[in-house]
Image (cartoon, rainbow, N blue to C red; front, top):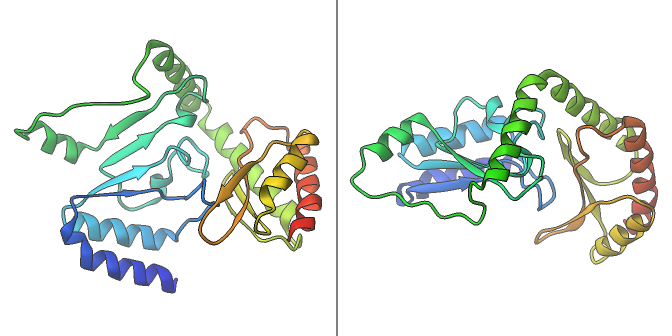
Length: 236
């Protein structure tokens, strides 16, 4: 909370010098770091008050990964731009999109400047078709997916409780801290046992990122987590 207050005060002072600020609401690849909802609401309010365009990078958090369709759905404010990929078509092909809020869209339409679009994940036909099918499935089965994400989070809570591991979680996203310079060894160790995990690194720590698919068998997830815990305890 103290760091959030300091960050908010700093942004309040410097935001007049910025036109656009990009926010990743959950730092997935850095170890599932997030903030309180209260902080995020206050932050966006400050930015909008100072006419700063707010871009949300929900490439990792979008499409129910945090327990909501999108992370911003739980906020009082919405971003001006929303970057999406990964879950948009279940990773079938490289594909992404940018959603533009109505207020920003009006400003862009009335602007005298030309707009250009460049992308390494352009709207190819296969990508568009796969995204259309997956999004249709999401819309049709939203309640089932939400329930599954809640079940996955419950499994995280159940299995990791009293495990003596340092971890962070958000919806179906889990990070387990590992002793410095040992995470890579552990990932390879688990891979030999048939368990695929992902490494995360930041300036202060390293560890395992675990983002199970929504259709995972919960019994399999529990078994895998118990094995992960057993081996992770050797690297604390």
